[in-house]
Amino acid sequence: MVDNICAIATPYGVGAISIIRASGPDAIPLVNKIFKCKDLTKVESHTIHYGHIIDQDEEVDEVLALVYKAPKSFDGENMVEISCHGGIYVTNQVLLTLLKNGFRMAERGEFSKRAFLNHKMDLTQAESIMDIISASNKIALKSSNASLRSQTSNLIKSFRDEILDILAKIEVNIDYPEYEDAFEVTHDYLRPIVVKLIENMDKILKNSLITTVAIHGIKTAIVGKPNVGKSSLLNMLLDEDKAIVSSYAGTTRDTVEGTLALGNVTLHLMDTAGIHESIDYVESIGIERSKKAMEEADLVLLVLDVSKELDDVDKLLLEETKKKNRIIIGNKIDLTPRVKLDDIIYISAKNKEGLDLLAEKIEEVTKIDSIDQMNGNYLNNTRQMGLMEKAMKSLKQALESIDYGYDISLIEIDIKNAFDSLGEITGEANPDELITALFTKFCLGK
Image (tube, rainbow, N blue to C red; front, side):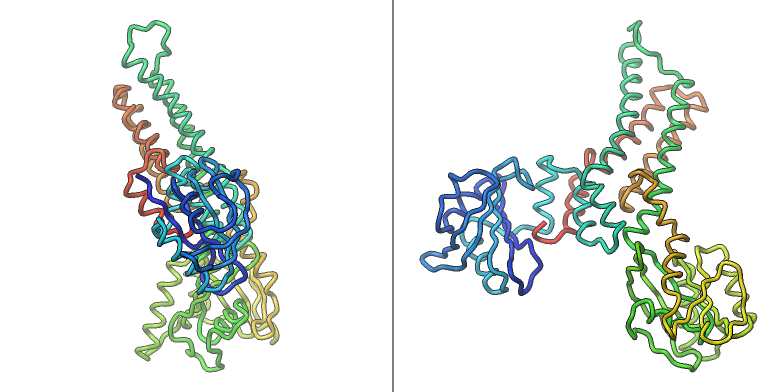
């Protein structure tokens, strides 16, 4: 039997209005027991009704009750959304009244989990709900909304439909070899289809590397030798004094972090200790951490002091970062510039000049501006990408078997594995454990 559940669906705290969701097979009659005004069991679906929540004979709050009747609700079950006053105490009192009258507290993500189990959405759409909530830039929001509208689901469905057609033809060949009108599946027939599937999946994965960076943010390391203005740049970007700025070299001895939405890009910034030779033990630890941050970063902002000639450390950093996704930043143009390099962005962190040029360069280097041309041919997170990589690996194994001339029935195993891996992306082949783990990431009212 399905329980009746409830939870606060709006952010916890003082506000004008709070919304409490109540859902389950008996949600409407149970809410009706504590709702004084109309009989909610006799109203039309998708209608709003004014009244009061009553705990025994005591009035708790003046509310609006929005009634949804199954299956036309968010989670496919009977649902009532109660809009009450937004104080912490009054919201909790309404919630407690529900809990005393046949409801239990919803688990994290349980509303969305029920929507998935009731076939109101698939896993990619469920994930997009949390992506919309956590979106930190325009592209992340656009991508998440597209996924909620089944764009990702349709992309996966197109791959699965093509593979399903192959599997159906193979099954006919195996089970009904005597059927003269059956299409004969040969190695020559399979090979170009499998090759094309692999090529298309590879393109999707390459696009997805760009979009996941846009959605979840770019791990960005600010590096350079001491006193070139790394901390000043961090403070300029964040528009706050997060890092200590001093004219003394070696002031920053550890990484200082911050998150910034810059144009269409979200940067997870790390200001690192200046890289140079040091005999100071603590400073040396900071320098090693700087080098590690530089290696692990998706984007390196290499800061040079252009008021001075480049020295050996600057040249070493230019060499060590040339294979990285990097932007060379020439700081201190408020002084007389003495360095000219190709593809350098000149700024004055002190005077907060050059931020617009830097934002444009970041979008160019990270290829964020190419997302609009992808026409939705990308995935939104590492779980989806990992499963498509798994599907592509199975197809590559099938291709290898084709080239070795293995029996079609053996090749079918790898093709079927690819089909199942793609099904896991949308939840059509997902184990219960994965579903439970996924929805626990949601907030209570989702």
